[in-house]
Length: 60
Image 1 (spheres, helix red, strand yellow):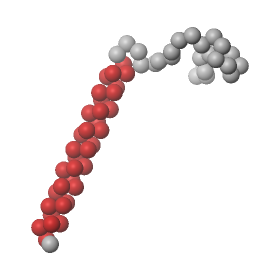
Image 2 (cartoon, rainbow, N blue to C red; image 1 turned 45 degrees about the horizontal axis):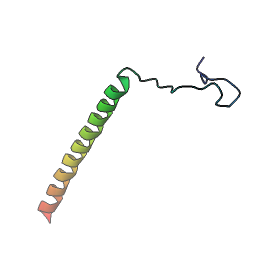
Image 3 (cartoon, rainbow, N blue to C red; image 1 turned 90 degrees about the vertical axis):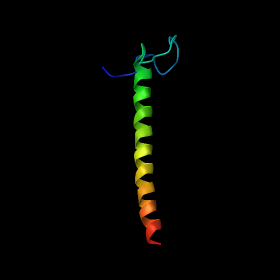
Image 4 (cartoon, rainbow, N blue to C red; image 1 turned 30 degrees about the horizontal axis):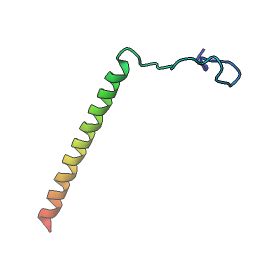
């Protein structure tokens, strides 16, 4: 059911095209979502580190 789509004995005979599950715009959408999540995580992390740095440098 979830096996390799080209079950031909472990060779590449009969494979004539690319298998891409995210065709028709799906891959671009998920790529943009992943980029946004990464940027948000970086911004939140930078804000937290900046706050801790300011708090620590004020005591010294």
